[in-house]
Length: 314
Length: 314
Image (tube, rainbow over all chains, first blue to last red; front, side):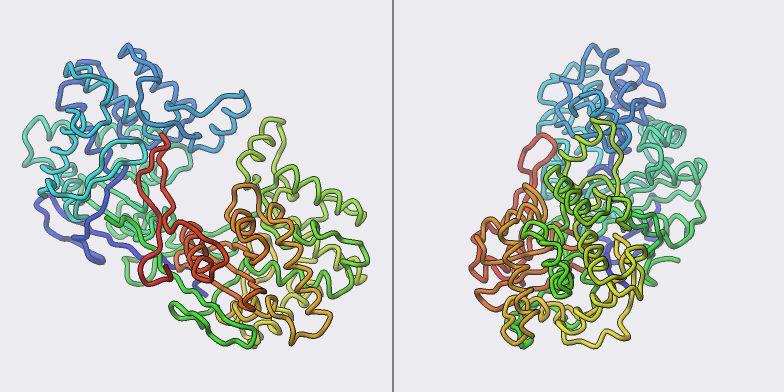
């Protein structure tokens, strides 16, 4: 018996926007959420901030991450902030408990309080601060609509997605920055242009390649041990960069195929977006996954499976 | 912009099975999961076990609970087990971290490990053990299909739901016990018979009233401070007993109206089942709730709302 069902939309496109695979209404407007982080990192490189501050691939991966706040993540971001002459109080994201369960427990054990540095977006925000510093812009208020940091992100999404976002629905993301509604197909095209940047301006093309290289060289920094993004990127051995987002979003960049993938699950469930992404990546030949993920109960017994329905690739 | 959507089925019936309100295919087969716990507690009383062991209302509430494993829950269940001459190792549910965040942190701080006693079902399992002991049945293996404890639960669901479950889909619940698929409408009727037990055998009618009384007298024991079941039962001041279940299940027992409510969200999301239950209870006049629940981001800013769509009561 099928106990629960998720419905979603998925699209695979090339850099020209050509539809390669489509499930559902691919022009539906979605908030891309954290799945768009690799695109947001473009600004950090294009402004010259990354070179001016000598950012490593590890730091570019952290800028593109929804990390688990393990010691590895937190220490690297603190060191980066210190090099900028800043500290975690300069981050304008709110604090939340580490996503990584072991990191959460370790923090509780030492009597620590979750802070802004533990926010899964703290690497991205450090990238925003680095860009603002380099451009001589105020660091205070960098998450505010209208701040040049946010204006650049808006322009990047508009340009890369090939969509007029001037009248797009707007909201606030979990970490406080403005977000814009965009068609899922436009998001996928933006990702495809990251994958196949030959028609982009030289600087942007170089930035896109550098971000892909950074993410696939450091899959653990993009998420964390045992997490889906990290596991998939490790399994694909450099063939794909993937990025999860809140509310059932998923993004993939596939340079070898010149393709971008965008997925939105209607109800926002991560178990469904992960299953859908695994199915699409398996169909595209970049990983080879068992189509069924066991569901374990509290005693560790397998009591069911999560799997794709027949409508999606398999 | 509506970012995510959930779809579900809901039904309100009377003890004769008469449909009072219905949304969606109310005869769909669902696994009732933990939403059925108040019905499972019937066996504890009907067998005479509750009286033989002098169980309090608090213990009957814990038997019907998905508790947060706060000290209040854990201490009471440990004391109950001790009175039975048993200990937490006799529970056959697996262990998991306390659902209550403060309880989870407290356990980590003292270097404790989550055990079976912290399983949200440990009160129910203690009730199963009490029943087996009282009936002279083996306590070992009480979660196994075919054990008299489980046979009685199957019979109760069949009788109360008025549905032949002999060919029902079967599975294993998160806590290890067998579960049976049943029509959502049958589940609602079983709940309505708890609410309006006048046509039930005297013993069962008394047991049904006692369970309702126990749950509404101890809403904090049924879930925990700040949790939805507890908040709703406190707000309704004895007018309703409600019980959540995994995978988007919800049950309500309304003696004043003689009604039962059963809800299943297709994708299993708790935020949706809670919103739907709040809307139904508001429509039925037993609580008065703001139809929109704010969504807060990590900084504590309101960035959206969860609300019912127009298709459901409002």
